Image (cartoon, rainbow, N blue to C red; front, side, top):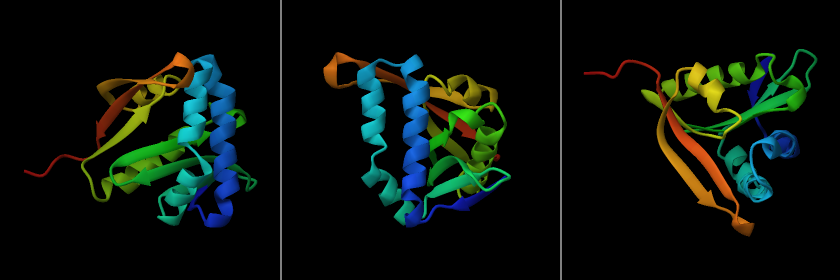
Length: 157
């Protein structure tokens, strides 16, 4: 397993991991309007902007296949997705640990927006719910998620 910064040439790979995971997993938890909102939020343009800013990373399995991605923006961990066939095998945990190390280099805590499918995982990893949010999506559906945080190192006195 290795994690590397994503290059502009990786845009299609990052988008594929993100959209495949959303389209496979999220319909079990969210109505169609919320799934469409997620896809639009993680648009090609938004992913490209983050890659160009050096915020996106790709995780590769032992054979060199891209299995997951994460975006680190200051103290925020975003767009953490692992392809469904790699879920439950430690790839998500590896991405989260990597992202937390990146955040901890400059911040005392990490924040992330947790979707319903990921909430239990983040709670097990020491995250706490700070706020609950509901977004009204097109078609009258609702997207519910939590803003979560985790202390990464003791705050300096």
